[in-house]
Length: 161
Image (cartoon, rainbow, N blue to C red):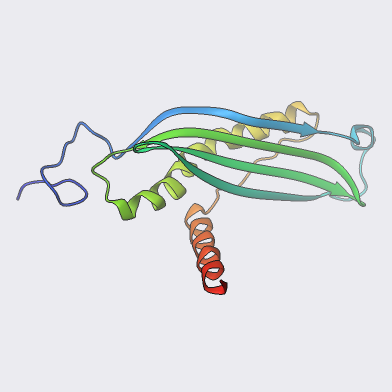
């Protein structure tokens, strides 16, 4: 049985991977540490830490997409903001023309941020550590769940109109 490409048309070209990373970069990085003296003097109790994650996908050329993974981590203690770290980490990805059209959106919305995440996680940990606080190490993120949630919200938005 002959190997065929992903869309079932023609032979599989093993020299063309379905996804290429063309570039990775910090698009935006911000760190605020407004109450460092209080942190150094010791806090009574643990701070409340929150993390927000967002994935944005933008086509930039035929088969090329910019994917931006945005992470925001912040900590509060007794209504005071201890720190806010915001990172937008981007990548340019090329999807093979052999990839079926219906598979492109899940690939760029799930696999691309999954590839960016370890780098963004390390940057966030380094920035918080270099800011004088214990490093913030993010747990793995369920990008499949985030994608499904986004699709569900888009479908609800369409049905409301």
